[in-house]
Image 1 (cartoon, rainbow, N blue to C red):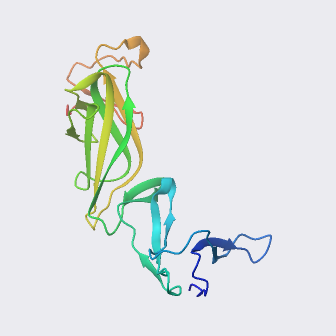
Image 2: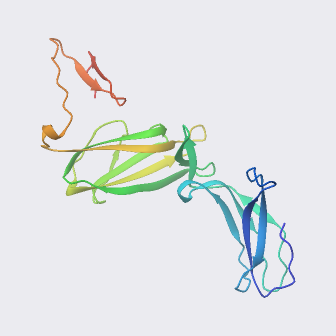
Image 3: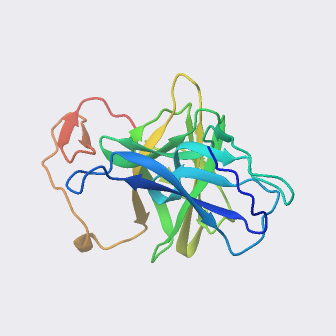
Length: 229
């Protein structure tokens, strides 16, 4: 509740602070502090939001019913739902997701510059997602050509600048029953004709019958009779 003020020449500044009941223990309650600003009041309402990791919303946003030049402060505070890209956690680590009130949200990862022309690309996403609630679009010529790719398959690049400049666009969809959560992105960019001595090489004696050699994402290697992409 905002205290009414008879002085209408200055606006008010409000700050949400923690209050300790004892010096030894942690803060256990919150309190609004208010003081006069150095500028005149306006009719626009004040806005306050609870923010999370990297400035993303993680809770409710609160809207004050402000006061005009010739009226006292209104003693109402309204709460609104968060929207768009929001902060959350996955296995105890910072993560992002889509808000309950949003149907989809699109954002772009920071660009990445390779030292060569990119011919292969493999992204790996840590979190919970499915092909129905997540879409990836990638470009290797700084946005000249975009391709929709799968986050579980190798993408053969057909248009890359030299050196390649990777731009990655992510779209999250809210399907009500399932919402994607992303905590980390791991990328593998491949070049054509790279020297083998600069890479990890696996050598093994091939069996007589056709076998597929799989290198799993957890680092284990296995042979399988089924050859599949």
